[in-house]
Length: 331
Image (cartoon, rainbow, N blue to C red; front, top):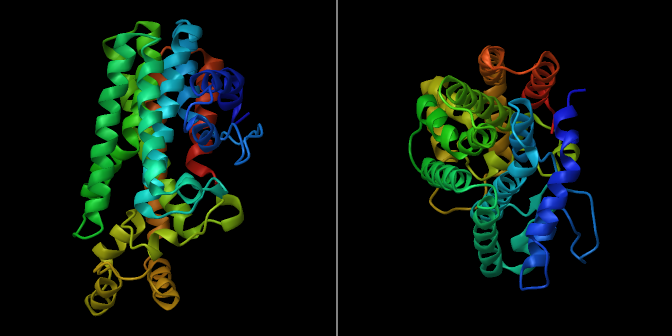
């Protein structure tokens, strides 16, 4: 039941992705691999992940009495924008694994991976235009905001960051596309006014809960479930929310050690002993509990927004289950 929304639209979305990425032109097979439609040898696979964002577009369209068929191109376009961002993120973060498979740049090199991401971006906008110019314009706006958030995230690696700074960043980097998912559903259904505001606000708080949970899993998750190494954010000195919280509450004597560990200077990854030291301090200061409480707070806010939307009882129940699943997931 918890993933009913995600499974309801999977076949439509995957078919849409296949149409958008069809062909033998350079890099098309790379893009199909990246979204999970093919393996590295071009064989059909079922590794497309949650497909959360496009599923939300179609769900909202359905429940607000729009036409899901007309919304499908914008939903696919949104998923392609998400995919483009991940190709570039993996290059910037030097992540070698994506969803348990080799990241694109490790297969084709950094230069061609950049080209692949750029092509996916162009195909995303071209696909969204098949829904409407309004949908494409909203997607462009969200993409710009997401990229600005990614830029801020990279800047945070070499500067001091407050919790407020961090939340503002994830509202862009993660929240932009989730808000866009709800907005695109509203656009397809022709809603405006208070309903459109509520959809946008719902996307905002779901985005925060989703990203904070990701941050928790990035330190306390399980490698075999995540499909990537845990502690990787600490090793690369990424200032995710738990680390931001640690900087804010650690005692003065330990500040020196923490700042030494997070001093970038283009040095190697953080040593094993230092990773263990950071995790120990996080545990001692109860940072995980604080972050879990923040997830729950945003989950409560999401439920309040959901209650105001004109969804059927069944639809509202499915959305509650999905939001709860995203906030409590282990992958």
